[in-house]
Image (tube, rainbow, N blue to C red; front, side):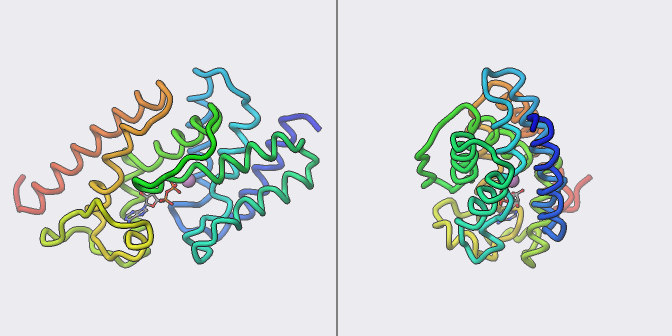
Length: 217
Ligand code: ADP
Ligand code: NI
């Protein structure tokens, strides 16, 4: 089977799996991450097949929607890749990407590194910032029944992952706890450049948001 056939089959598999996914993690998120990853990959020396498979499979089963079980996604991905007779070294690498991609606050212990992981991680982070990032944050906040903003509740940068997940903090706090920190975590040059623009867009959004909140403009 050609690489393109494998990618096409993976696209169909992921689309079907994510049919009922919540808005921030649906097929369109994967499609944006896939496009971002290809753009970043064009400026790097890397294995494009691994980048594509990693981008397509990175959220195949988000632990947030499987009682925090982080082994579900890698298992589904491995089973699919094995059924397509993908070589073991590629499968292992793609699984490492899925295992290591997630932003885990300050205690993200990376146990694996590769340019392909760097690329897919940047591509995923780009989709959490800028206009799409803003939309995803409020979509997720709505899904979790969180307030948009409450001036009496300040951002808290020292929550554990578990506390963070269960917190009822307003969505605006998420910008300070996560989204505005992402631009300094980018791995690749292309990723950094795009992140800078999206970061400025979010800063503009926040200024406007507070102005309107206070009845100005
Ligand atoms: P990813 O799948 O990109 O690694 P997450 O699963 O952590 O990221 O989050 C998915 C989307 O939901 C992101 O756009 C993120 O900003 C948003 N999100 C996650 N946690 C919160 C939160 N506490 N408040 C608002 N949005 C959130
Ligand atoms: Ni993602």
